[in-house]
Image (cartoon, rainbow, N blue to C red; front, side):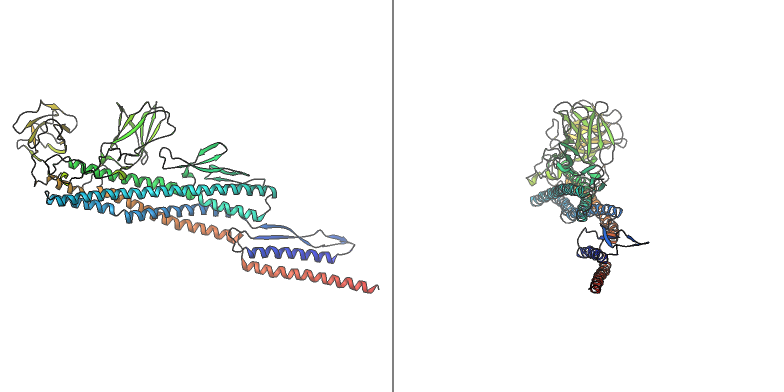
Length: 635
């Protein structure tokens, strides 16, 4: 037995060649996205004993592994999810902020123009040209709100489309990962190229949602989304889907399916782009839309109510300028019924007090134990409602009509009192003479005692006893809560009648009472005069009156507050993008420092293994020379 120099040289050449191959592959893939550098582990062959000594027999490449740090990869995936969510939120909010800054600026401008046109009517109440211009301003105001609502609806459709596209891509990745798992189970997790492809897909998946990776003993990896949805289990791939929104069809939901089983997924737990898109739609677009509807209701109700307090150019009580706030076209989408409801009850919402609306949404639920409960989705406040006939009255400015059949235990309804109003707002007045610029004159008797005062809410000339072109006097007793009405001739219109609260609605006159006193008299002069501008002056003053949100905001402030809130959200999103990007870059740098290809290092290895190859080849030459010498010596 002797030392086999040729075999030792052969193993050295083969090992050096393998090292050169691995190094060359690293250099070639230095710019390949998702590539993890590889290293060849070289070991010595078993030694052999000659005499009293052991001599080596060569070397071999025992393993080729890719450099991979699971903890660094997990940190990179988490950073990718956060950065994608932040970028998506910022992108969507920036689009919406631009809509409010560019297109939205016409809403307050049109509202101010309409107030200015009413002020012009007050200056010249009989000028038909000015009245025509005022109606044109009202139409521009309505059109502006219609267009703004259309923009918001477009954003909803675009967001839904993005959600659907991402869901489709997730399903494609799910199938690919299932096939990769099958390959890895066959190769027992040895194919570096397949592993790199798997990691690249998982990293892409982490853009769309939070990803949890569970290594399996078989070499495969199970993938969970958001910590609750199993997307891939071994070679089995699940699928994500989009289902019709419940209770509103235009707000689709996301679900996960395997076989014939489907589970609805909570998007708030997904994170990534999907979580950001759902959050933008439900937490930003929906409130913006309901607040825009709140403004539309405020405009329609305010001016229609003011019309009912005055006389038009024909001497009649003013009619509506805008479509009535409870018209079906203004009330579209106020109620959504959950698909799980077992009862047949149908709900409709009637706006009672626009000033009490908050722009919030509510959930109405019914249980046999707690009856009707109304939950404010914004504040979480729960109110118990009592059914009176077929009506539920809330303190939030609206009432709910229950019709169509019985309600069942556990039935739920989504209530959006202001939904659809901005799209349904329209000017219904066509004759400029219809603007009620003139107003009745209110006179309190000089003999009145106490501090009682009254304020007119509306007039209705169709009610019997309404004193057209004349006067009507109400004698009040706030101690007994009673009143009696008289004509201009002092003739009583009926016996003394009691009233409840602080409101009287009689003989076509609706007014509120404040203060107290006995035998106080107030006279409404209902005679029309062409030059009278009392009501138009009061209309013009409403631009600065806090009519909305329980007396805390003006009509304009409702829109401006929404605009400011969106601007604030956009700025916060921009800050989050910066922070998330920095964290991602830090994680990416860590991964690259361990798994990335360093060209300087690989160049040094290339030179080292080249020299090793040449040295091993030189051993072959030496062995050949020795062999030739031995042959020559025995000839």
